[in-house]
Amino acid sequence: MQKRKLGSTRCENTKLDSTDFRSMLPRFTPEAMKANQALVDLLGSFLTPGRMNNLLKHHI
Image 1: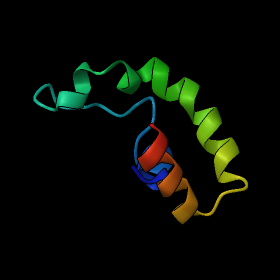
Image 2: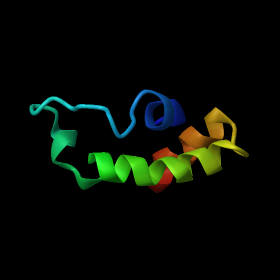
Image 3: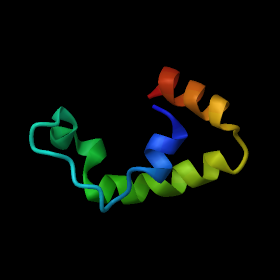
Image 4: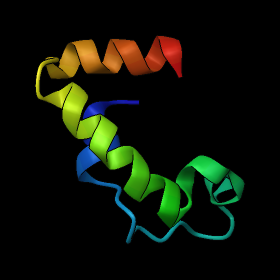
């Protein structure tokens, strides 16, 4: 995933379609998205988008 996808285009108010498999994953609940935003913001303050993408792709 890219930082943009986590931080900009999806947030706690994002509604996933019931047919989207992510709607069943705990990490995409509004509560989790809100809690994780602080981490995304912190990482984004010192990582370039490319490095953020690499980090998320290989470690999450």
